[in-house]
Figure 1 (cartoon, one colour):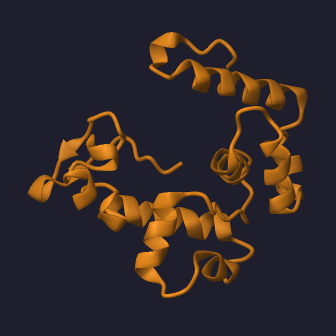
Figure 2 (cartoon, one colour):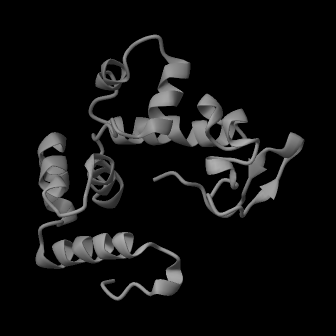
Length: 161
């Protein structure tokens, strides 16, 4: 994992962060079972101690990488926009009702947002010119078949986390 090829088209900074995460996993710091056994906030705080790992990355490492079922990714802008479309309450308040499965509920809400283009910024959303995330198709690289009315649809990858 530490030898991430420059051909991956990842920035040098991202390759460096991947190496840091790989080293932490190899040393046992990012042991999935240990992270799942922790309080979700404590697990996220532990991962945040790694150099270059911000709040969203830490939330996603614990929720998706370690498989913790109860992490609310409060820094995921697409999730927050989707929740604003669905609920008339603050996202953190809504997410409290999803305990102890906030990771999974968040995943479902985000997945639906990607499919329908929540907040005008997701797949096919107006804010992205009908081309998906960042205006370049669902996976952000301009790859993906165009569906009805130019909506970005792909059968291979989704930017779910």
